[in-house]
Image 1 (cartoon, rainbow, N blue to C red):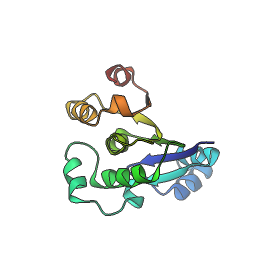
Image 2: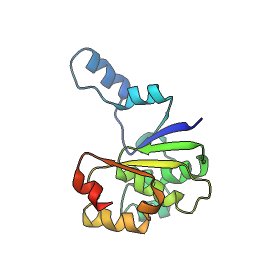
Image 3: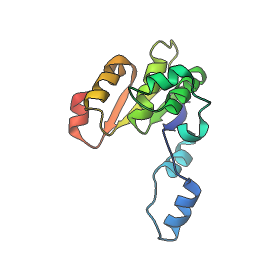
Length: 148
């Protein structure tokens, strides 16, 4: 049975968000119910990433943040072929694809795209060979999916 993981670059306080939504004072957020339903592990680069290295800071000039690259390296070492990881944005998905590019026992990876079809995103996707590494692309915009 696969183990599920959700990875994102930044996240708010989900406990507070759910409390406000229950009181009708704010919108619901899909991540907490998804984590519960799948029994998934949630990774947030702004909370869970180790200290970024110099290489992480250099790679972040192209795409993502130093913390997303740091978390991607950590996840690439931890995850195997029995895992499924869903990245909620390309800022986390592309660094993870780059870290997994040469892995022999890599997990299945899905990435939700928001704005990858810009010049910097196109270059980053080609450099990390996103089309060869990422198993599933999701988007609300057809132009994003046509690009990949």
